[in-house]
Image 1 (cartoon, helix red, strand yellow):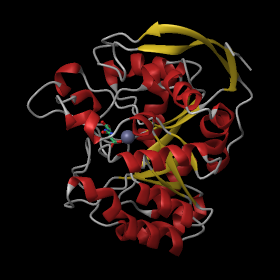
Image 2 (spheres, protein in one colour; image 1 turned 60 degrees about the horizontal axis):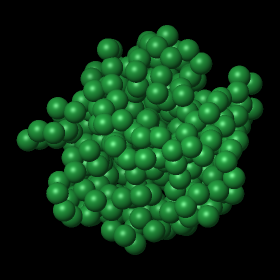
Image 3 (cartoon, rainbow, N blue to C red; image 1 turned 60 degrees about the vertical axis):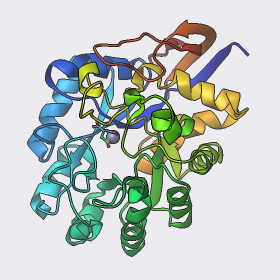
Image 4 (cartoon, rainbow, N blue to C red; image 1 turned 180 degrees about the horizontal axis):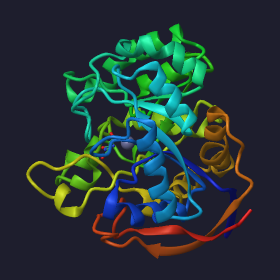
Amino acid sequence: MHDLVLRLPDDFHVHLRQDADLPAYAREARDRFGRVLVMPNLAPAVLRAEDVIRYRQAIVEAAPGLEPLMAFKLTPRHEAVELRELAEAGAVAGKVYPEGVTTNSEDGIHDLRQIWPLMEVLEETGLLVCCHGEKPGAFSLDREERFLDEFCETASRFPGVKFVLEHVSTAAAVRAVGSLGRNVAATLTLHHLEITLDDVVGGMLKPHLFCKPLAKRPEDREALRQAAFSGSPKFFYGTDSAPHHKGKKECAAGCAGVYSMPVALEGLVDVFDRAGELDRLEDFCSSFGADFYGIPRSTRTITLHRSPWNVPDLVDGVVPYRAGETMPWRIASVSDS
Ligand code: NCD
Ligand code: ZN
């Protein structure tokens, strides 16, 4: 097979950044995705209705044709009236950041139970809760697993609220999401389907593969791959493409984040193709996420062509995922409607 036609995918977890950085990153996303759930960890954060409106406007101006789905940083300090305003402004999800676990999360929560008082209004407004699932203070490789108790307790206690466990990185998280109710789903990234901690620190240090949550053990990666190939609607694509300029990664205190967007669909097709699972790809990247978020599946299509190309060493000042490697699939065209 040389051509692959897919329903236009959605990316349910992306960092588009802000100001001068935004246009290039947003256009890179538009080349591959119809809708993107845009993460709010800017400085200052996307917190209130006016922030959502302003940020969405900046994205739409930077990359006409890309449809941003807006998330805000959900904190225990939010008032019910603010959440209602956020929903009216078109926000679809609140993102919870535990304290200090990733980029711009210094003001995060200690425990998910801190947002229990907001659950009633979250249910009433239909806002989803997206969780960065890592426990502050836990040993780095155990942080995701240590978050699961409070996540499971919260998601079971509030079945009228939808929860997404973001960028899962462990077999334990896959099991937890699988065992919870229909109000719970998880996103999977391209890089967590491909790499383990050994790719990051097992030989020479690879700062461009350093991200949160850290890539884990081979058996964890295998569980993530099986989840992606399973056909379960609980698992769908969120790239967590998180660009940081080259100098912010290649330094003494490097930022966490993998810039996967320049290969985010090409690489995913390659993963499914090499596993003999292309039949499962469209549901994973173009259908299950929209279904969970309660939005219509896209009616547009994207065509990929089997034709090798080399990933540049640098894209807009950032070293992309798979830099310098040859990718077997390239994007040929995107339909208008
Ligand atoms: C993300 C970023 O840089 O904003 N970094 C990362 O390692 N994934 C934040 C996040 O999603 O954790
Ligand atoms: Zn992220």
